[in-house]
Image (cartoon, rainbow, N blue to C red; front, side):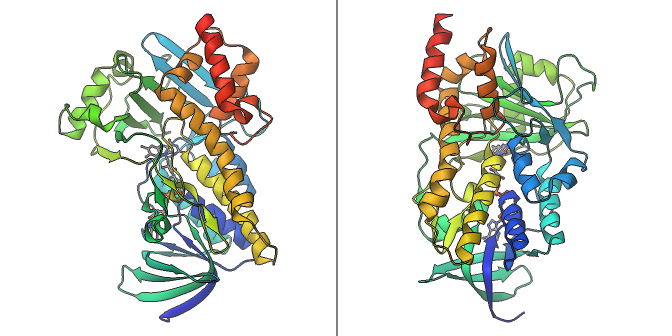
Length: 413
Ligand code: FAD
């Protein structure tokens, strides 16, 4: 390999946003190189997809491969708080579009998407890490080091940062801005869930979100896979974990035991995999790009895991960025604020409303309301299914005002 190389577009990271954006640009006839520091499959958190993801996978011609991969079917979300239970059926929603999706181990899922991009002609270099980057008047220049010890300079007309929690450009270009959300922490693992396949207490086709019986801001995810295993995690502000057991497995088990409905569902579970933790994952940036770069997915903003919006936002950002960059590479002037950041943030803002209201309890009042109006439930269901950019949905277009009005109605009934 030469020590200096010039490409049109360089994508940093081959996760969902990197795989999708590179395939979309390749299909439009552009030269794209993906530089990925890991070797796939590799572990990633974020296993519950939303149905809107399927629209973006179809756009890149990857839906057939995902549909045929044997992942766990998903058609909704179930919520539990003490005796209260609620279910959202994503096929019964306000916005048109796919109503079902999958729950996926991210190792094989991300590898499948990257392999699909490669099969469409995208060059992906695994084991190559972007270590430094300089923006030029036009384009960018970076240093890449491979795990075989190669070191080379890569020049490009445009760089797409799809490095997820690596947050390569925000770090190197000092674009980091603190998130509005407090420092929360997740403790999580994969388990052999031990739930009978025909159990009437548990629907494998839905993610289960359980609220702690005492603390409304502490919640668990249980994301079943198709092989009798599941992803389990608890989320709380970091300070809540300070007094618990230091051993992460013991800490997670203790939180589950504290929550009778979940302890019951998991009574036969085997904790056979090391437990992990992540804290302070919410992140924001001062800009999402200009004529030389754009930040995709988690490399831009990451909100919160509660409504499994991460991969959907990552894929939406890839779809928008590919369209804008295609125009720019064909000679049009693109305004990266108006044509990329603003449309992306419309949906992110709607998700943000419901995430904030989940933790302060307002959205939980709506979710657990015993007699929801069906048309309103369909609008909320559309957002939970990922259709947070559909501004014909009043709960998207005026999320805060509409939600507060709904909470007031719930309080009266
Ligand atoms: P990633 O999937 O993180 O991919 C980034 C890639 O970039 C990686 O492969 C990495 O190796 C590579 N990279 C990093 N640095 C470099 C470098 N210097 N050079 C080259 N390559 C590099 N989302 C959901 O949709 N559903 C969920 O249920 C869900 N649960 C979550 C739970 C928790 C606790 C957290 C914290 C997040 C969760 N998410 C969930 C969010 C989800 O993990 C992310 O939003 C999603 O993975 C983002 O995809 P991405 O393509 O932006 O980045």
